Image (cartoon, rainbow, N blue to C red; front, top):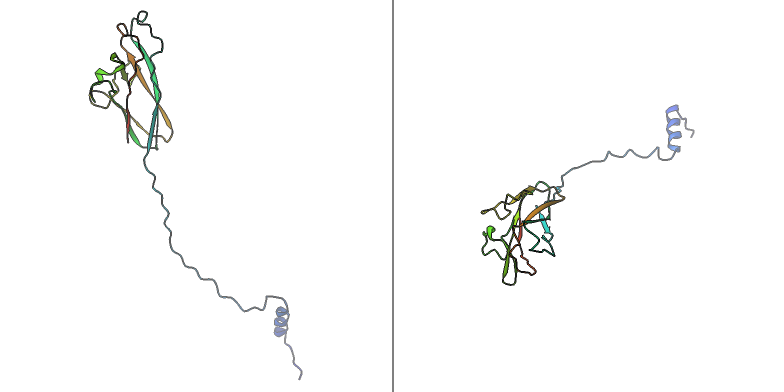
Length: 173
């Protein structure tokens, strides 16, 4: 039997000779979608550290006639946009939690009055907000330097010795 090929069947035969052209048509892929939640909770946080406030290591009360001023810094780091306040205690030797007018350094049984201030003019006593002021600020995410200004009003009657006090720094945020 002799088979006659038409032009259409010749074209189909030629195309089927080429690889992959005669494969059956594949169905289009199907898709489905859903959702995935992603989250994180950033907490507010603050850190504070301080340096020693040193009025001097060789103060001669016979040669010093006026007040002695000194300053130091606190390093405060709070998360961005976090409002905070920094309070200073009256000190271990003041005789009371709110006795900011009685801050004193001690050497044995001897006392030496001093004061801590928020400003360079030494007009705002830095304390806990009761009979005193506190520092307020807003965190930037970076370390912020706060200056504590100190004053020894007089050393005229001071007894020789090494005087010290411990002041607690409290940051509220």
